[in-house]
Image (cartoon, rainbow, N blue to C red; front, top):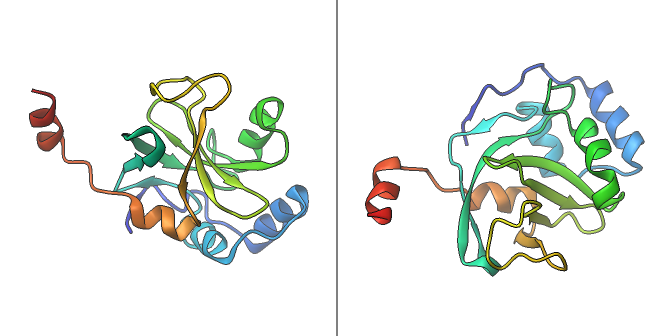
Length: 153
C-alpha cells in the first residue's frame, strides 16, 4: 500500500522501543513493520467499512512516532480519560474519530467519538473493523470521488 507523507520523520529503533516501554508491551510485528517503514502517513486507499454500522468512513491518516500533531503517544495521553490504557490510537478519520488497537488482542476498532453514525450511542460507540493491522490495511478501498457523487445523486 502507498502512503502520502509517510516516514516523516524517519523512525529510529530507539524511538520504537521507547514507545513500547512506555505502553508496557511489544507491538504486533505487522504494526511494528508499518511504523519502521512508514511511521504513519496518509493512505492512498482510504474507504473503510464499519460492518456493525453498515456504513463507511474515510481514513485520513495513520499516526506515527514523533510526528507533529500525529504522534501515537500524544494521542494516547489526549484520549486517556476516555479510553484508559486498554486502547492505542493508531489513526484518524476525516472527522477526527480514532482507529484504535485493543492492546489485549491487537484487534482494531473504530471509535465514533462524535456519535456520527446512527448505530452509535453513549453506551456503544466503538466498533470492530479488523482482526489485525494487516487485516485493516487489506480492508481499505480506493476513494473514487466520481463514484461517490453518483451514489449521492
